Length: 199
Image (cartoon, rainbow, N blue to C red; front, side, top):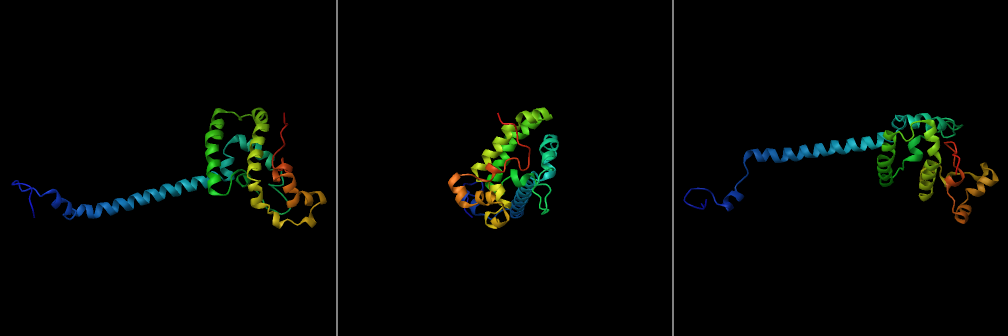
């Protein structure tokens, strides 16, 4: 073993090439496994909360939604219908694809959560005063995505025009949509919530 000087200390090269101390042999892999475990738990917790925040139970934890939007929704065909298929809040208001879902969650965090704590909609009168603006925001978002959330359940290819009125069959045709540039929400506003009085 080469020495740097007469003091007997090993040279830098010797120290670098020396085998690791026994505690490094255990500490490095254990630290890596621990960090991996912490990361996995954090990721699963985040994903779990994202999914939980899309449940009806979570939506109804705010009295503004429970007392206003949800009360209206329970009177709609999306809540109760002859087929027994029920759409919940997230089916219409939270995108299914991951990227758009996260954008929507961030928007809710930055706008809707603060409004809840500031009491912007905490009375029926305040809710009614903001209803038109809220509806227009949702309708605009649905138009931008060609009513993606509607189409997640209502597939154009599965519709039977023979079971629809002549007017509905015409408006559901691809030719009508291409000629008029309309999407589901243009005709079906108010399907789950009362229509606002527009200014």
